[in-house]
Length: 285
Ligand code: PAJ
Image (cartoon, rainbow, N blue to C red; front, side, top):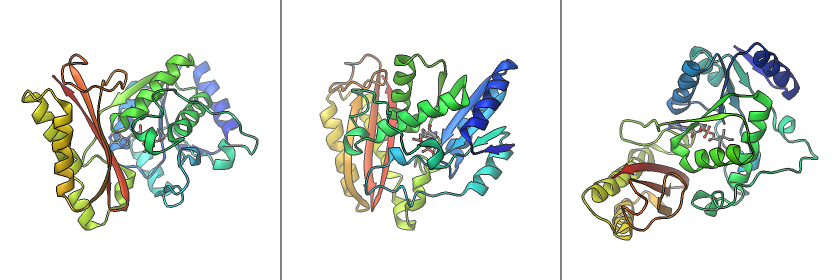
């Protein structure tokens, strides 16, 4: 396994791999790898001849006052885990390599980037879309792997590559969870013991929605009220940003079960202490 920090070097390498007719699978991450990331890597390993893991804590997707500085980082541990999973190349650029001082171009996915998490984290998805497009261009990936844990992100990336005719297949990977249902995330590291013990509540509350909807409840406002009640019962939940019901195919809002056909995306963003967590579930009717 080789680690490459320079864009030019990576691009030349990617060109030679493509010339030899081999498929490149890219797993974009911000590092501090966990089982969720590893699942993406394993899927790439199965489907592609050359697997590239990118590790880049992208400053452009963090707002002022967010956790860019304190975001957990451990490149040596990440490299070790990546090597065990059979990654071929780690792309690990510096921020100054990715964003030259004269950088002026950003990608905005209208309508999808400013709803849900985008409404609470202004500019976040503009930073995500921009860095993902850059990573796709640099690595010349045939396939790129994204987790359903960040459902909105995955949909935005899919929309972007379709709209901008980027020749890559976006592969989605189901959410990997801890035993109590908490979706794995590098940010779980911020939780103290008590907060961690209570963090399974998000998944519990998604299951509550699932039970109600499967049990015949059509009015999603009623479902939302019950979910909020469930969250507010827990004193470690300091704030709920949103609970939303969306069409999983296009993220359009729905207010009644059955309206979007067969499936409903239920998405939640809530704070445990000073840590913001997100989760979601697609409920098939
Ligand atoms: P990061 O949070 O490191 O996540 C990298 C990829 O791993 C994303 O596609 C994310 O959805 C996926 N992932 C994270 N936790 C997961 C879980 N529990 N189960 C399944 N997949 C999971 O998302 C980002 O980085 C960045 O925004 C990035 C796309 C790299 C752009 O900077």
